[in-house]
Length: 449
Image (cartoon, rainbow, N blue to C red):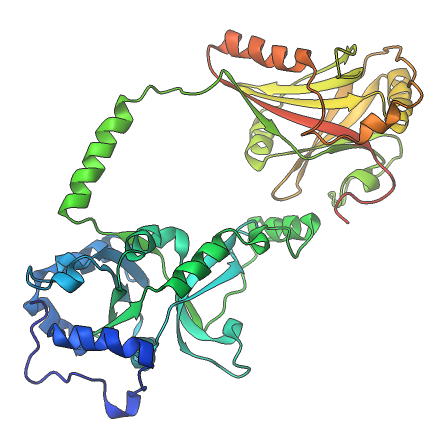
């Protein structure tokens, strides 16, 4: 059996820290006691009783140093062969700072794990699902104000995939040179809550905030603003310590992965992008640098993924503007393409939109266009000047303008767009990423509300 209990080590927390166990947790606690597992003992005694404690601690310290952290592992690392009920349980080793010494008995006695959704303070584009263990509710008794420890569920996927077939989760707390042990139920209620949170619509980053607000938060963090952190919450980074069987499986997977050909999938990989806009600067962007002046005239705004924006900012893309005649269900259009390496961004300005048609005729007379590339994540802008061809454009056919409202998903793809991506793939001898976007005429309203 693991962690043989010294005679001098108490089996329950001190009376001053005692918290009554909820009924549904008592069965798990009785199971641990029946297996001879101590509730609390010194760290030195635990390390003498079982060498695996040292191995788990070293693994955690190597990855996270003195930062509070969580290491998930298989309980078989600590249990003896005759303890069949616990051997297959997932387990956590949680290291906490000494200031949490008085909280540990309350964490041990807590009867459940609490999943909840919260926007990541370091990445406004990610609404995380955290799994928390509450020490106590403060003031308003609202979960957001609770004193708690928590971990991103992405970091403990193995725990809940394994735990869904087990009765409980074994947790060992290390705090102030003391080891405390407990278990939490992994029941249908918890698994259902995790599953519901995984697919919740509120996890969409724009569920409760506008695009402009999320971009503002992103720029602030990029500019060095400190995220607002709750002093009553300890966010635990986590990793996994593999058991012998898991290590063998990981080696088998590694060998298989390296045998797979480097490139899989089609030569052209297409991604559909947010609509672009053509209009006055104040109409097509929600934010711009203070030294930019809205001098009137038309601005073409294209929103691009942040990685592509960084790529174009490091080295300006090759830009091309061309007129494409209608083919099949795809109408006449002006096509703006931006390319660098294996990336091709294609913005389609369809002439069946009367307002867009009028704006394009004016640009053909002027012979130029001011293009701004907006980073989707931060809203930062990159300005380019395009030479616009003096192309004589066809008139809009009466009754055809309704097609301009089509979404990029519904819009028929012009064969010339894909053909250009195919030609680039042939030239590079590599797969090409094609980003398609429809451009609409600005209507005087900020695109981000």
